[in-house]
Image (cartoon, rainbow, N blue to C red; front, side, top):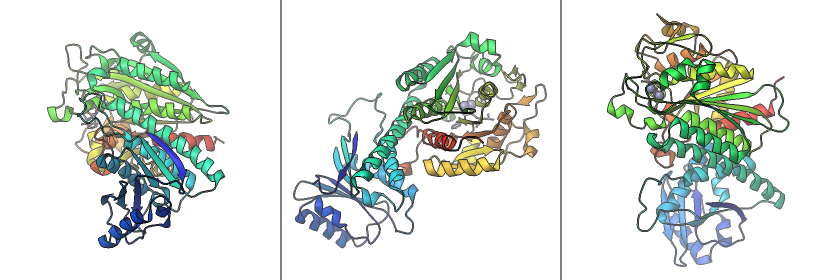
Length: 496
Ligand code: BES
Ligand code: ZN
Ligand code: ZN
């Protein structure tokens, strides 16, 4: 898809117009369309009386042009969340109407906000909306609906245009890397093994100039990563430990470390998941994919910051060599893990990754994982569960969530919860004692392996898209936009 900014004076074939309830057609349209086309659109809007929120109308005009009219809701309710969805709706409606080219009236998409931020948002969200995952499907006779060109018509000065173009290009990078994570997550488990995930990390590193190191099993053993080794024991696929590093020009001080769960398929192990719960468990490496491609985005944006990405990659399978409930594994930190349930494998491999992260003397570590069904029980499927000990970071990460579109909602990690994960035979148990608060128990478990400022994101709630996201079905690509915002913030606020 080619996304570009143009001036309003350039006539267009197909136009996307978004209107508040009761809003009249802007004069801009006249610079794109003939008087007759413009009159017909205006007539349609007048007849409709009210272009309601979330409605879309496609008008085939006598000149052969097509106009899509989207309802934006009331002016009062308008916000950046709605703007994000509106951009996606525009692309979706184009595909539905079979348009491969259209002009978006920027003024109707943008809020009263900052032109630069909004140009970036259009770049990211349009790119995300353009994503589809058809690799495993035969093409329909008429071919897949694709969007070739989107022109964003805007009325700004040449210097502003230059700035907006820069922002749009950055937005496209973030959208592309988000789509790469969606591709990795959607890829079936048989085709996305720990070794393949490591290959993808290598490829991303080669394309973006990052440093990459992949540990294979002997090295993982030597380092004492008993958690990674334990979980991977039941599978024929051998584990990998992926390390990516970006050190931007001018980066000083301690690094930011991102850690992502890379379970390429989660059967539950010997505590095998029932059939319907195993569905989509090829996406249990979504946190790892987000780390790989957030790193790639940060490198492509040349952010002046030192960032390290760590992804423990395993497959969780039942077999004669599987780890068992009751096993006690020794993690890299020396703390032992008592396995109460082999399906709580994510935290077990993350324990080693978080332990390994200490070697970087990090400024801040954030892990992201499709960790618990309980997080979905608590929050539904729109917000990620955010855990951190530090009130300052809690506020910051929530705000960055809002800014990026990867929404975060805070959960408690009080010391009172700690007894839930006390081990009987080992130091820490990989499952809580009670029936409730499973997302919190998982966070409390991870905390045992942490010795630096840290936050944990349980992204199970947003592993896949919702209908209302107006994105393709399947993986949502959570984390990339968020980590880019976090890296930017860290770069702009060097440690005192
Ligand atoms: N990968 C799952 C969590 C999950 C479930 C992610 C649904 C996305 C959608 C995780 O490894 C798991 O199985 N967790 C268990 C933990 C329990 C055994 C303590 C769970 O949530 O049931
Ligand atoms: Zn599991
Ligand atoms: Zn899992």
